[in-house]
Image (cartoon, rainbow, N blue to C red; front, side, top):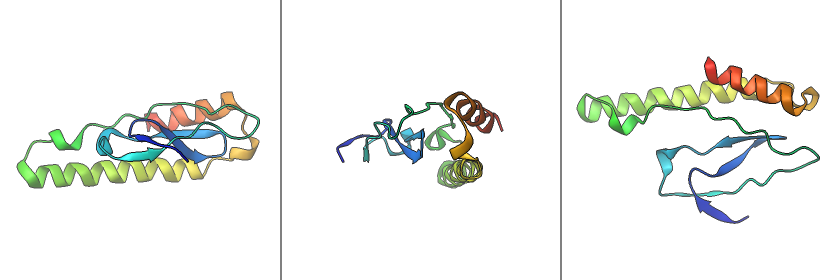
Length: 101
């Protein structure tokens, strides 16, 4: 699989993708070009940049941990979706709702 800079799409499950965050902007991540009969569903889940947090190193560590927890929480919600029974529009809506939580 080709490697590209972070902030490209990478696979998160059948018919959906999760954008690699800017947290690893210098790293390489695999490219997700879509698979199966449906094109990938794209949504954006934004997170504040923890490297810009106030409070010195301790504040940054806490911000990174909170961001990690937020990503993990959304991933658990994504894994709980009935992916096989959702069409592209329903999946996109469900992913947007996860992003608002």
